[in-house]
Length: 217
Figure 1 (tube, one colour):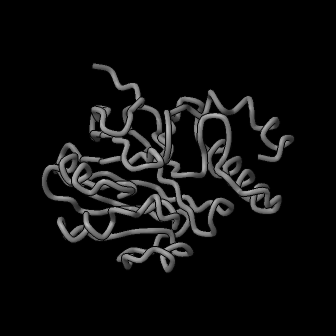
Figure 2 (figure 1 turned 45 degrees about the horizontal axis):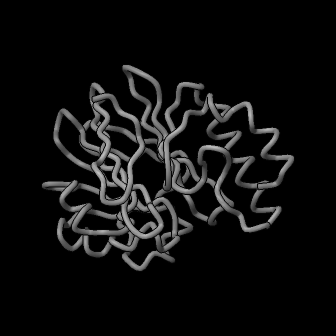
């Protein structure tokens, strides 16, 4: 079955098979958060993006050993199950440097813009975006045999950037960062995996950037 990225809480995860990486998307919790399990096909090492909620569901999805859990930002709906998942698996934890102190489970790795996060034979590039929170990060997997894959947390969604609660400076910062660090450097084919809801591509969203800036949200 081809990957579609449309998942719902209590439903079947969506699985995407790339030549070197398996991506499993599962929806959890009362605010329909997406969690993403990445598995290196060469080594079977696994990395989880956002242990958001429903630890039993996440642990069933993991199914075995887990190397790392990355938290995209400090908001509680993205780390509610982090303590339980780490306790059960012994995985190391990682988060953006400026958000880590607000996540109650200590971060073993403090991530900065441009860092490379490696598990198995897979490299993920870290980008730091300021606006939704001070230390939010997104992760880029540049598939050597295909297009990039971008895990955006709550920084980019279909139809707009993440919530900045009417703060014009935070909105400008986030949109500027999204434009310069993502849209300006990655191709239209880049697949976007957000922290909530359905997936999109940069090419789908690119024509709307000016409209987003004009409307201010």
